[in-house]
Amino acid sequence: MVDWGFTHRAWEKWASINIGSSGEPLKAALLLNYDPSGPSRLMSVIAEQQGIKVKPVDLYPFLDFIRRNNLHTECFLIGQNEYLATSIHEHWFCARCVNTSKPAGEGAIVMQTAAFLLVAMYEGSIGSASRAMAAVDQFAWQLSRRNL
Image (cartoon, rainbow, N blue to C red; front, top):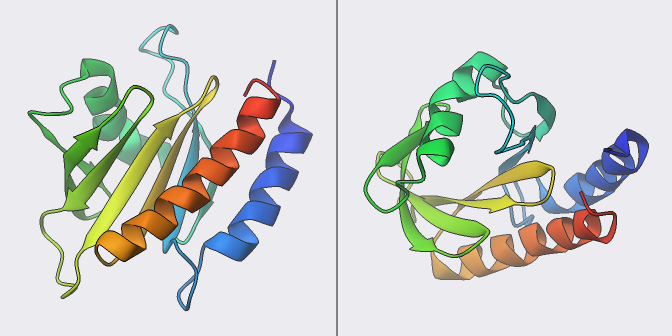
């Protein structure tokens, strides 16, 4: 069972120091309720979001992409950005935006925990990706301490 009080407090604290426009490692992030063994008709609900405004229906193609597990052969959309997975691991993957207008590029890190998908978006290249990964890993570790 998800401890919503803990999850919300942890998100608020983490997001306040990691998501923003100047100096923070992430430009936006989403925390999605996700149960891969649940019925597909039960669309995941957005638990938290910052730096981006999306509706659950907007995320259906992304969640379908995750369920199909063809990470290495397909692109996915978050908002107006199209991403291609570049590094795939057991519980997380990195992706680069293929339609960005930013000179240094944009990327995303998607990490699955026991109860959530954490989607974090950043601007920049390798250095930015490293900072973003550290931020994502920090929050995922907090969730995993509660088996979330």
